[in-house]
Image 1 (spheres, rainbow, N blue to C red):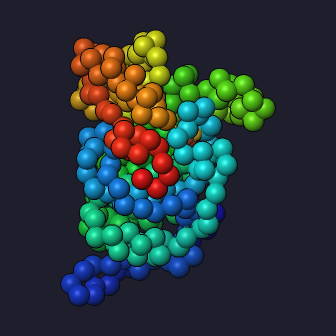
Image 2: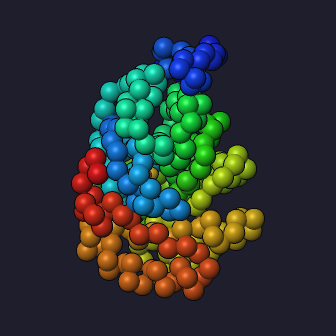
Length: 257
Ligand code: SF4
């Protein structure tokens, strides 16, 4: 990890306020690409995805195993990441993973992107807190249905206890919710998951139903369709929002789409 310690300053060029970033700031990155936000309240919005690599969880259904089970990718300087993002000429930026908040230099990265005018969404599982500023904190708490024990292989068995110890961090969720705009997204695999979500949310009475999004667990179009069929009506019945997963519907979970 490459966290710098010096604070940064501002200067102006062509009327745009820029942030001078400490050159040692860097984030380990799996990919940077432009696509359409597929989930939650900004579904359908053209966005640049900055996908960090590395995760403290090992969900069995992880749709980006190249950031978790087999993390890959180089460290890229914050200055270079901002340059790459700006080349797309797209306002919305989604900092995702993996778990982006594991990496300290996501804080200056977000600061810089916001300073030059981007709308920044951070996608997090809500297990690690950093004071990273965002336009929207998109929190996806992981339920018991995420346990890697379900896959039954040796790697999963090793990760099971670690995953279970890490996946629920209410004090982190409290700080993330208090920090500003947020949404909560739950991955639903089976109808029985809905009772766990209700129990979970009973600890957060301040969270209104329209900030809660239920999404089908899906890594293929077939899974997406079969779970959407019942989950959409259940979300409406329970007073939550339903979110499809546009990227799976369109591309069947191809990388970089
Ligand atoms: S938290 Fe997200 S990135 Fe990490 S293992 Fe689970 S689904 Fe994958």
